[in-house]
Length: 322
Ligand code: 5GP
Ligand code: MN
Image (cartoon, rainbow, N blue to C red; front, side, top):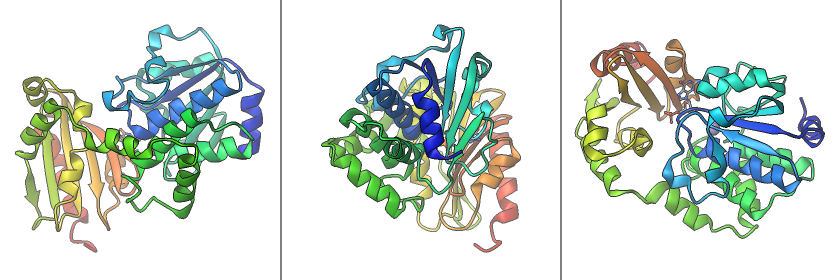
C-alpha cells in the first residue's frame, strides 16, 4: 500500500499499539519512539511495547521511559503498528497483541518480510525503518519535530553503523541532513550510541575478545559470550551488542559470528559479512533472518555445539567466490 494511503489510515485511527522486535536495537527503539512522538503531535493515543529491556544507552531519547510492559496492554487497539520485524516471531511475547488489534500496519526493511500485516510497507532499499517513517511523515504532512528527529536520526545512524555500511544511500544522507536541520545534537547522539561505555562493558569486552578464534585462513572470526561472563562482569547481553564488529573488522575476515549463550539449551547467534557471503541465508536455515551483511538466529545446543553448527554451514560457502 502506498505511503499516502497508510498516512490516511493513521490519521483516521486512534488508540494505537506500537511494537518492535526482541533484543531491541537503535532502529527498533528510534523508529518506535519517533512514531510515538509524531502520533502525539497529532493528538493520537499510543502505547509502546518491546519484549526485552531497552539498552540503557538509548535513555537520552524522548519517550524512552514510556515503553510499557506487555502485561499493561489494553484489551483492544484499533491499530497495531509493527516496526522492523521481518516476521511475527520477532515480536516475542508482544505477538499476542496481534489478536487485540483491528488493523495491523507492518513497516519494515527486511527483504524476507512475511507480509503479516493487514497492510505492509516493506522497503528493503531503505537503510532503516526510521528512513521509511521519515518519508511517511513528510508525504502526509505530519510534523517532524525536534524530538521526532532525534529518534529517527538514531535509527538511521545505528542501522548504517554511523553512515558507513553499504545500505547508506544518498536518500539516507539527505534525510539525515533534514533531521539535523531541526537542531538536534547529532554529535552527542553518536557519542551516546557508539562511544560511551560502562566500566562493566569494557570488562566484558575484554572477556569476550579473549575467546577470539579464527578459521579458514583467517576468513572466519568467532566470539563467544557465556552467562558466566555476564555474571562475572555484572553486565547484560545488550552490553555486548556491538562486540561482533571487533571480529568483523579484523583484516582478512569475511564472516564474523558471535555465539551468545541464552541458557544451557540454546544460543543466540549474530552474523556479519564484509563483501561476499549472504549471512541472511545462513540465519534463515535456523529460522532467523536479517540482511545480506547482518543477520541473526537462535539455535538449540551448547555454545560449542552451536559454534560447530555455524562453522559447518560456513564451510559450504567460504572458498566459493571469497
Ligand atoms: P543482531 O545480530 O544485531 O541481533 O541482528 C542483525 C540483523 O539480523 C538485524 O537486522 C536483526 O533484525 C536480524 N535478526 C537478528 N536475529 C534475528 C532472528 O532471530 N530472526 C530474524 N528474522 N532476524 C533476526
Ligand atoms: Mn532495522
